[in-house]
Image (tube, rainbow over all chains, first blue to last red; front, side, top):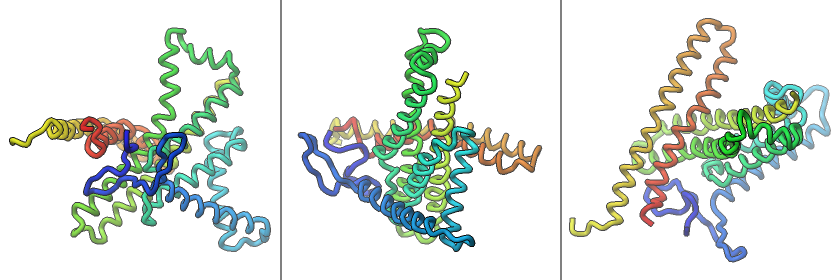
Length: 241
Length: 86
């Protein structure tokens, strides 16, 4: 296949990922695409914020100023969310959940800044979901041991093992496709409005951006993190009985 | 009609298939409506728990939306990536 999924197909409605330049890597043609650039921009923004926050918290004052207030609010909200969902396991996972929350949220709302959201590329969301999947699997083996995992796989009867296996593998697929398709639907509808009825697209497309970029993006970020926490918690708690 | 090739036929059938694929939106529509209705009923019964009810409802709706989005992805692939007409 010459092109990746949804990449650089020729059509008038332009919501595709474009390849910027390509290079050969072990005989494979690897493309550097607009998604990579957008991810780098998002990462730079996050990195700048974290460095500034780190420097601020090192010299924290008794009476916080504006920026310190914002940093404390973000950290408290994220920690509170993880604490609500995971209980006493929260302290081990608050870092990971907070990181992917910030990244996905900023990626989703980067459509407001004129970027093509990096999460509208299946590569990004699949990577995020595979990270979650490996954490779930690792926690399963850590807390239930091999015997518990095998017992869970053969849940009512051993003949159900293939179906349980499919159920396990479906977790990253459904998580990644959910995030990808939600963000992509927003990108496609905005592209349709801006190209097909460009003469009438004055001011009111802002409402589309509010719904698809801000509302839907925030909800999907929350859903992704919530599902991650639920699955990880389930993997841990199944081992405690 | 004399320039009508096999590729054109496949593209037309792909467009019909894309239209059929987005019929998958019916299911999540009904499901989300049921969730929203029960959410409204729950708020009516216990207005104090409005925040919790709303966030739970939105979470469930976002998860239920997935099947509809699968249909959307299939439709978009058929329309824009044209895997069958290669």
